[in-house]
Length: 118
Image (cartoon, rainbow, N blue to C red; front, side, top):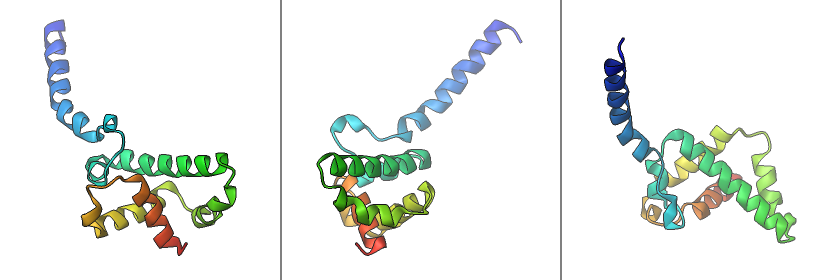
């Protein structure tokens, strides 16, 4: 394959992949992700978004000296894998379309509280 054909193939691949890459992750520059933005993300984004929210929740509550406020979450998550937690959140979001325009992070915590009976 000559350089000209390789360049053409690379350009086509980049062009075809661009729309998917643009829609793969919501715009975080807005300050927070809404549930609608979360839903538009790819599965990898959604799974790790949930993981990040939980990480942040645990870190901020613990850092504020209120580690006891995280006990319910730690008990709830014990033995769960990230994809299971993401599935719980997915179900919650799908069941609450009236909340899709609102910030997503509180919905992650609400989904887990509902699922774990906290």
